[in-house]
Length: 173
Image 1 (cartoon, rainbow, N blue to C red):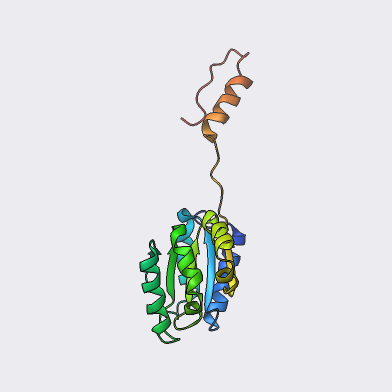
Image 2 (cartoon, rainbow, N blue to C red):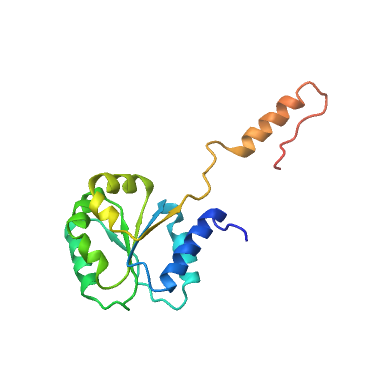
């Protein structure tokens, strides 16, 4: 098995474990900690591994009012409703999630997406809501190199052959 599109093999295995749990009727409330750049790939992986399940489109929770509206809608749906696919992108909604955490265990299953910084804030500001989760899937992805790899290699070749008569041609031309 090879990792695709920035996901590490361990990320794929973590998502596959979550997919198995979703296919078996649980969890009611799961959190996926994933960078925004990797969410589409991680969601695609989960959807591919759960073809029999119906997913709602991802909804970004940006304001406390929209968060309460989504939680009320989810809690009024039946247990076999589409998986609620929510993304926390703002810390202001964390208190609303904490105050209405019991709605996360009623109605449709909830998959809550957040990045590492929001996750830390969520655990700090809303420990009760954090404890309501059934599972957490951690998706790390491949880190981007902090430098231009091609230029570094070219510089190394230039230094290596600097004392020689042959002219150095760019290694990437």
